[in-house]
Length: 418
Image (tube, rainbow, N blue to C red; front, side):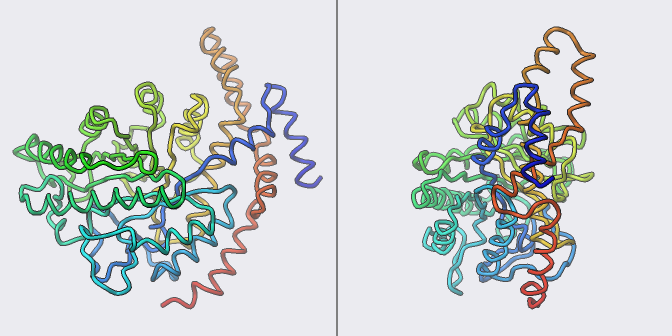
C-alpha cells in the first residue's frame, strides 16, 4: 500500500471512537510552534563585542558547521523548516541583532537592527517571537541583573527590556502575527543567601518599571519565565516560580513554564490544567532536562506526550503558546531542530488522535479498568501512518528520509565553515 492507502486504513481505527482524522490534520496545521534560533549557533549571537556564555547556560559539544552570522543562521533555519510540516514561528534573542559591524550596547537596540529578520520572515510567511538577552554581558558577570543592588546596573537592564518589548511590538505590526516577548534572568546565589526578600523586592520594582511602558497587546504579548536553580545559583533563584506566578497574575501578563526549570521530579504536564483555570493564555518552553536543566533535544517521551495531551484534552491549542528551548552542540544542529520540532508536532497529533471524552467518561464513572486498558491499547494504534500522510500532504520528507537531506546539506554547506 502507498502512504495514502495506509492513511485511509489507519483512519478507520480512530474513527470508531468518533475521531474525524481529516479534521485533526486541518487543526494540527494551524498550530504554530515557536522554533528557537539559538540551537543553530550555540547561543552565541552576533554582537560585535561578544561575552562568554553565562547565566548558568552551557551548550556542550563541538559539532562542526555552526552558523557564524545571520545569513548562515537563516539559511540553516530555512533547511530545517523545509523538513518540518506546517507554518511556524522563529524565536529570537536580542543578541541576534544585525548592526553592520557597529558596536551597539544592549540598552540601545532598535527595531532597525532586526529588519533583515523581518524581511526574511515575511518572505517565508513566518511569525517572530523575542527575548531580551539578560546574560553573557559584563553587567551580568556577577550573576545579578534586574535584582542587582547597584541601581545603575538595574536601570541598564530595565532599558534593555523596554527596548526589547518595543522590538516585539515592531515584529507584530510588520508580520501581522502577535509576538511573544519573554523575559528570563539568571539572578541568584551559589550559596545560602542572608537576604531573600531584598533581591525579590528589587526585581519586582524593576519589572514594574518595564511593564509600565505601554506596548500594544495586539502586536506584543509579554510573559515572564521562572527557574528553580541554575549553575552558580544552586541555593537561591530570585525569579522563582512563586514569584513570577504572583507577579504575572497581579500585573495581567503571561507566565511561561520551561520544562527544565523545576525540580527533577516535577512535571510541567501536571501544572497546565491548574494554570489554564486561572489564565487566558500561558506559554511553554519545551526542553528535555537530563538530571539538570541541560536542554537536550526533545524526544517523544512520556512527559512530552502528557504535555500535548493536557493541551489538547483541555481544548487549549489556541491558549498555550508552544515554544522550544534546547541547544545541543554535539550533533548536527539542523537535525536537532528537525528532531525536536517534529517530535512536538507528533506529540500533538498523538493527543489529537486520543478518545479523550471516552476516557474522561470512564474516569468519572470510576471505571478505571477500562480507562487503563484503553489508554494502553491506543499506544500501538497506527499513528505513524497518519503522521506520514501529514508529512506528504505538507510536502516535507516522510519518515527518516529527511536525514539524507541534512547530510547532503552538511556536505554542501556546513563542511565549508571553519
